[in-house]
Each structure stands twice: as C-alpha cells, then as structure tokens.
Length: 427
Image 1 (cartoon, rainbow, N blue to C red):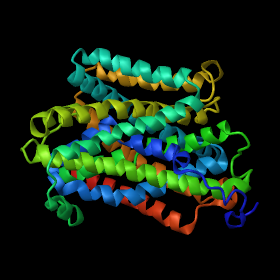
Image 2: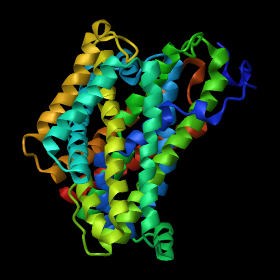
Image 3: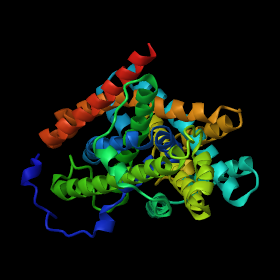
Image 4: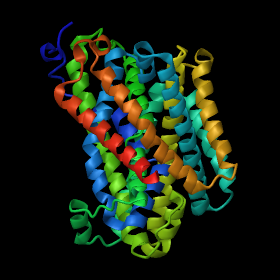
C-alpha cells in the first residue's frame, strides 16, 4: 500500500469550502448543546472572565483528537466501537460503550428539558408537552428521513448558534475581558477545578469522537466510487485535507460560540451578582432585564436550535457504538426494517432521556453529572483512540503523523491531569 505522501490522484481538485464542511462542522456545533450552553453560562456567571482562557486552550486539543477520530473512521471504514471490538478485549469495549450510553442518555435528558424550558419561555405553554414534542421530532427525522437529505439539514441547523454571537451586540464588552482572557487568574480550589472539568468535559466529549468517526463512514458509504482509504489509498490526500479543514472550522466555530456564551453571561449575570445558573433557559431568562428582550429571545431560540442538532448526535453516537459492538446492521442510511437494533438503541436512549425529565431530577445535578461524567469518561476513550490511530494493523500506511500524534497525546494528558486533580480535591 502506498504511503500518503506518494498519493497524487485528485490532489489538484479544488473543492468549495462549503462542500468540505460536513461531519466536523456538525460535530463542533453539536458540542454547544443546551447542557453545554448551561455549563458555559454557569462558568461565566460564577467566575466572570475567569474561565474564558479555557476556550482558547482547548481549541487545538479538540481539533487534534477530532481529526484523529475522523481519520480512523475514513481509513478503516468502521466507527470507533467496531475498531475497539477488533483490537481489544470485550470487557473493555463493553465498559466504554456502557459509560458512553449512560453519559449520552443523561445529556439527552438535560438537552430535551432545556429545549422545553426555552420554548415555554418564548411562546408560553407547557414545558412537558414541548419536551415530548422535541423528542418525537428528533426521532422522526432520524428514522424516516434518508441520510443524504438529513445530513444537509444538520449542517443548516448549525446556523442557530450564531444567536450567541448576536447577543454580544446588546452588551458592552470592555477591554478588561481581553486582558483577563490572555492573563487569567486561575483559582486552585474544589469549585473552580470542578467547573473546569465540567467545561472540558462538555468541550472534549466522548460522543463527539464516536459521532464524527461514524459520520465519515456514513458519507463514504453514501458516495459513489468511494471506499475506505485502506482500500482506496489514491483518495487519501483529498480526504485528509477535507477532514482537516472541516474539523478545524467546526471546532473553532464551536469554541467561538462557547466564548460568546461565557462572555455574555460574565458581562451581564456575573456583573449583576447572579452567580448561580441551573439551566440554559434560566440563563436566557436572567438576560432579559440586563440585556433586553431581543438578547433574551436570541439566547432562548439558540437553545432550541442547537438542541435539535445535538439530541440526534447524542442518540446517534450511542446507537452507532452499541450496534458496532454487537455487529448489527448500522447506519442512518438504512431503513428501520433493515437496522432494527441500531434504531432501537437510538429510540431507547431518547425515550430514557425523556423519562429522566419527568422524574423530577434536579436540573443542575443532571447538568453537572453529564458534563463531569463526560470529562471522566473521555480519558480512557482518548487513550484507546490514540492507540488505535498509531496501530499499523488498524490504519495500515495511514497511521497518524508525529505532529498529530503529539497533539492527541497532549489533549489526553490535559484531560487526565484535570480529572485526577478534581478527584484529589474531592478526596
């Protein structure tokens, strides 16, 4: 098999930027889900400018680990769970998939509840009815809309996140925020480290690794004349460049939105002495008297839009992982009758998340559980992902290059150190 440096076919193809954007853009946008918005809002409200630095710090790390995940999917033609199944003992695979399923289900619950809250704030009516409606809409789109039509829909939904850029036009941004972003005052106490783990966990989340790898597989299978890169090495250079551009744009877009949310809540809520935000909808409501009705509307509408994007990603990544684990027919490109197991997991994850919303679980606890659990679970998964990406048995001639390998391991080390520090403070 040819090494990638000798691959020249299609190298000179000039693909428009919008066509290069797909799995990476959707993955990055889904990272700013309603529970993530609540985490960023709480960080801004509680610490003001004190955590803005984390957005810039995590951006290259996030880009690195997502590119690695995408390359594994495109090179092998299989998602992460399928590759883990082939390379590691079953107990390890089952543990990883179970943790992913639990974290995703809690995340779905937090997101559906936040969407119901947000629409109730905008339009009035029953939060419970809206929450059920959003769950049904999400399931209907995933099950009955063919993937080639569904994928562009997800891409357009990313525009909802510009609502959080818009809210900044309704508040005054002092230069002090820039200074404290570049020269942060870091506090080493239990609360600060716990919030940092939550921010990192909602930024570098396991479900994003599984989703982007699986979407690379979906797009490869849906396109005529495309095969896994191990079988079609002549296509490698074009796809590696596309993956790099797609992922860089997606993750930078994601973290730009996170920065805007943190900055908006720091400038308004923290300045007004409102330091305890339990949900993203509560953050939107608290903005109304401080930044005006339109800022409130943009913030709340953004919660609904990004939730419609994130819930399918959360449920879908769980379904991909479980279906690959048990070798079931898999993919949003298949009909319900062709992939009953895959769609069953997708439905179960969404319905369980919906049920959690009606059990009276404290929203702030659900939020922190989801974000913190994501941070903890990401560590072993990132280790496995990096090991897969450096195995010739998995990647053939396309094992990741030294620069990407270093970036991926740095991201893994940062997550490990942060989680260990959190447990040290708890102990």
